[in-house]
Image (cartoon, rainbow over all chains, first blue to last red; front, top):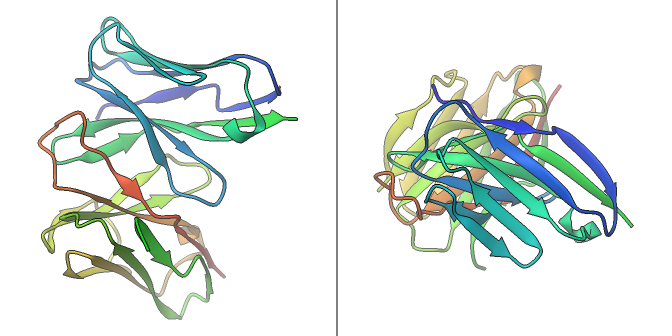
Length: 110
Length: 117
């Protein structure tokens, strides 16, 4: 069974700070997805990374897929309270059976 | 309404009760899923339906019984639950079951927060 480890588990920062969260595995993935889950809601897909070394940007969020396609990172620049939530990485088995990591719970204080 | 709608949003039940969770998707998707989200565990896939047929049952106890009467509706029937079954139950849908296509996307509902007393 492939295992996704996310770190840190919890992160509390002030508005305006930068942060990076990680999603690691010993297995190679064809692709990884990042989701954000806001309090009281279901996860929402942010991005899918496919190619080793790929970098994707979504406004202040920068996603990177490791060269060996075993890990991924999410960097947030100038965090805002609206970024608060649970950030989940997931890989997609055949048949769209998503397997999730444990998540990083981010709180951005005003 | 658009997207994936789950009802109720919150449910408190005793261990001897029988209740049902409902999920409806308005996206014209062919695949629907139940996930369980506990406080101390990653999201766990419970059941998968494709074109109203169950294609995955992830070793879920029989006290959870899914039903998919059509491609837009999914139910989770609950009976004689245990306190450790307290969790957020999330429904999701996707256009089709993918064959590992990286850009397939799951759309989640807001979940039902279940407390078993």
